[in-house]
Amino acid sequence: MNVFITGGSGLLGRYLIPSLKEQGCSVTVPTHKEFDITCQHGPLFSENTVVINLAAYVNVALCEQNPREAFRVNAECLDWLAEQPPWVQVYHISTDYVYNGTLPNSKETDLLDPWCTYGRSKAEGDM
Image (tube, rainbow, N blue to C red; front, side):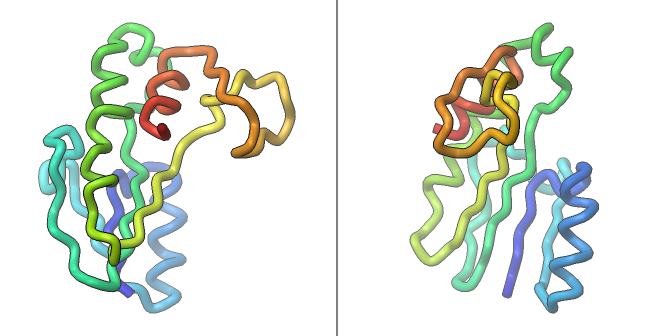
């Protein structure tokens, strides 16, 4: 299986990539220079490709200082995910910041109630 990972240099990618390779997957992890999610277009993927989006503007404090950039990266630039052909499996990884943080063990069925710019931008991207 071919796996294309955006944002693979982050914490989750450092754990996910070795696991996928151990399972025999062909893993492509472009650098930010090779694939910039903010360009709002992605490569054309062949059949049997899985795209895992881990890319995000994740610095919570900087999101508060620069909300426009947070929304551009975490929400607006994800259109390319939705535009992939139906034979491409796409997985978008989000954050628990889309919930208000008062409930333990939030679930996808919980109502979105983000409490900061980072959470609001990620929730918009999830939509």
